[in-house]
Image (cartoon, rainbow, N blue to C red; front, side, top):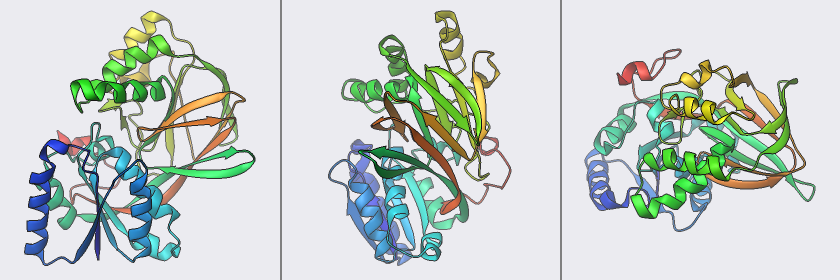
Length: 322
């Protein structure tokens, strides 16, 4: 059974056209399906869990990175055997602002092509991130599929969202939001430990821990990140000068950040972030506030995704996009 989760607010201008095309396609394929429509924030998490527990072995997401992230949380939280979870194939028809997870797999807003690839693609095991944090001594977990960001990264998402009603859902929102965030950011002192080794013990200006290389509507912060390799790649910036910020801004979209001498790189399967301060972060563009220390863990091959046939293990996906 195919389960479909639809976020009608993502790409809503062409929503009706896309929905009609999908229903027609499903009729022609004689594919049994059930669908759910999101109505409020984090509703897709509930729907993803519901569909997984109902036994759907395919789950298609019509939405952006945030909607997909919520559905992934639902699948990971579902009360089902691990063997059943591994048997679920999820996929996406990109309809959001950034669409960074889809970008890695060579998918774009061409919904007809995305649906064709979903129904004719192949299975690929992918890694999932898990954020562990505490509130009043109680442990909580939140999963993410693409990346998690702190400092300027998270504040950029705040202002990108505020710009959306004025300039629409465009990746330029993130670029403008980035410069606004630079002026508004208040740094937080923190310690970062990656796989037991201290990486940083200083004020945090910017940090991104990535499963996939893109975030913020095409910004390529961690060019080496690959959601199939079982390792997270990250970068950390302490207190850059204004000149360094301008230099870094020119490298946001081409992967060149990794080559700058004031950008520190790290990698690993488990990152411990220690701080006593209030910490704002974003997971797949979804904003969260936590207080105190947290842990980020890479869950290797935790889920299966339907990807285009041309995606080959060990090859960078942008090779296929060019």
